Image: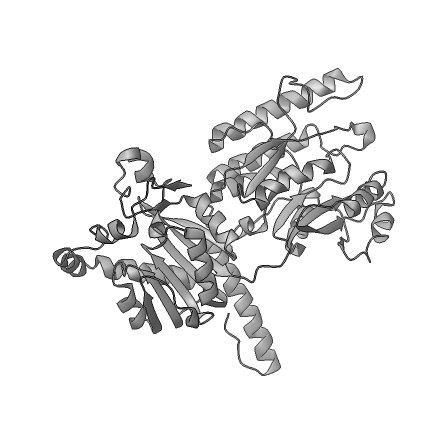
Length: 467
């Protein structure tokens, strides 16, 4: 995070000229040009796309940039404006809060967001506009960026704003660019649980030799200040894996999903993601190649708020053959390591990254990162799809070293040496050029759910319930 240091005292801050508030002449010129009208209209249009909100109680905190209050009242909102301390007697009263030219002026942005959280109704929406340090203008102008002002005390980018919102109790986060200079952040209030939950997704197909051992170890695993939710997706194995999985179906920490046919590892993980209810998600192979002792370090980065997306890197250090070592099969090790280096380089070039192990199954992230993303791949290409779509949504993964014991084909390895790499090439080209639009996905999902509820209500003879 970037902040002003040293910061002005309260008296000095109050005496500073407000460079964000336009002069009367500038305001009149903007009104004549329709700039303010267009901006306010656009903001409320995006808010409707995000949650379908059109009326209710609105808290407008900060400067009234672009006559937002007038625009809101014109659209039917009951507006309360606050430019200072929030009133506790209004707690839980608002459907929507807009922070315009407000968060960057707060000495304690996280405390401010928690106050806003209290002011909103359950499920209430928060919309933020703010300068962004990763905006095109900020990256181009660097220290000469016009938003570096004495009255701006804190600065955010797309990642830090999401982390702050997550810690303050907001979910369903979507951050978009607001032109050349800033960002728009959309989020929904949720009630924070007394203890956070980690969802461990275990896709299992023909893993009878290892699933039982893995499950016993998982059920004994304890993480500080976290509950574990274990989701096993069994894909109708032929070697007795389903019978082993059924032994754990009544355990309170286990959710068992039984598929009627194997559709690929990626499909199983996608099914698990739909079931997961945790604050964080970790994908765990059922073959014991990955070490459960690495959970603490991987998840710790998320819980501490330092990162939203962590990769457990198997490759690196002085031993470049560390990741793929098959006893007595040096040629197979060379083939796999060469393929790993090739696809890693391809991902880094295509998506401007500096990763060492993008193909790791140890992908750990806040579940909220998936908001607005559609995942489609069914086989091992899902690893690339999940990684790239999170990157293109704006998350920067951090890599931490993990232990890894690679198994050979005789032990049950399922990657196909020729067919799967071809599918990876195809999916990487697809991921490079497809449009990633989380807001459009959220809007489509909301309208779909609204249509389903309306249909069900019509069949029952009732009236549709608004979303």
